[in-house]
Image (cartoon, rainbow, N blue to C red; front, top):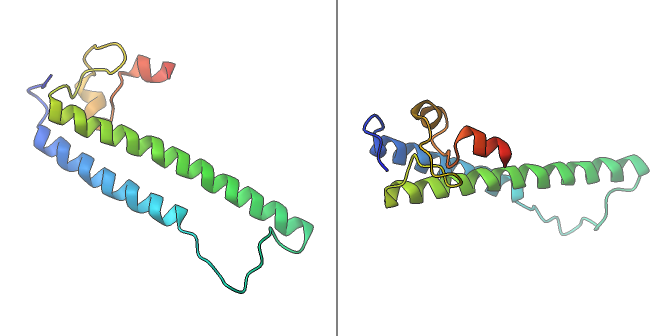
Length: 116
């Protein structure tokens, strides 16, 4: 449902920019640089292995968070196209305009998002 106070063309442009930025960030985060001379492992010293493992775990967590944000942006774009932008996916209530302006990728109202 379209809210007359929201310019959906502007919302779409913001969402497309967000999608491009998230996709680029995800690509950079998941880029694997192969060194043909490198051995497979976490390092030669005990501390090196721990540091490398923590770094890999952090990267996986960051990639998961980016993927979740990207999914919200993609869903918001679909909602703009189908005319349901601004309606909560969970409870079907209107999402306040202030929330949509602050976070255009919102597909859930604040209470439903908190319950997620």
